[in-house]
Image 1 (cartoon, rainbow, N blue to C red):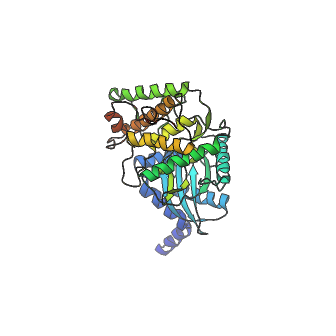
Image 2 (image 1 turned 120 degrees about the vertical axis):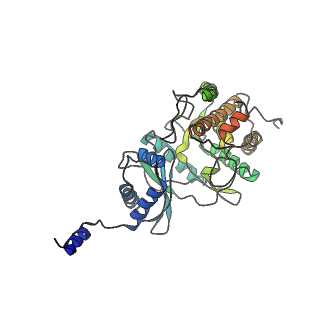
Image 3 (image 1 turned 90 degrees about the vertical axis):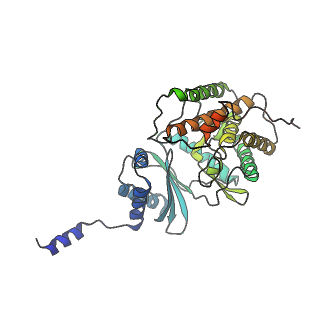
Length: 360
């Protein structure tokens, strides 16, 4: 066989290139290496990057009737999220959910979103029905969240987040949360599943105090008889986009769970500042956490009762300990994070009780 014949045969066997698929595959290879590659593989059945990119393009064409032009971002947390620009100029978000989320639960989430959208609440609604991916997890397309990232340490931003959470509560109080998953802290196990497949939570005597904090908080949460509603359990600046001081879009709606209002607000108060897109402390101070609750009360037009405050405190303590445990599993835990905050408080709660001022 001549050199020319060999070259021609290779050319005939070469796959047809697709600019979107090629670019996404290169991006995945660049951004997900080592442990991050293993983590992505755990959520996508270890598919090669090229096959995963081809599947993403196929899902866009099948469920949206248009083709993707380029990838805006790819993020892996508990699930996998793709920001995509389409050839018609619009942008969408494709989310692959973790295998723990059932179709019934996802339908419950989407029904809540539909009601919030009808009330003109700034959600990122679904733009497709849910579907099963080729690696047998659930997926769905959502509207793209535009706007800027703000830090929750700004008082105007904190008040806006608290006010929007109070508005959210008023809109979902009448919705039956039965289809939604139980909130973290309401399961047989002490800790929720790891957000990263490569993190190892081996028993460490020096961190047993985190188990004690979480167990005490979990006991309070499980003993609560407060009424439950659809509750967003990851409320904060990392899941919000702003135009000026106003929230323009709120997302991460698969964080909806069955929980009481007090549990939702206590959890938000402990983590509403947590985000890594702008340089700012991820943990609120005790004063900021308390102020968030008071801002919420002002917006809701009521004060939390003596029966609700232990749940507020326990919810804040549980999520703080949960994030601290994840930080401790890293070889170099971040400075001034949730682990450092708990250490500085000697394990004492971030929230410590009702507001000093009297209710009007």
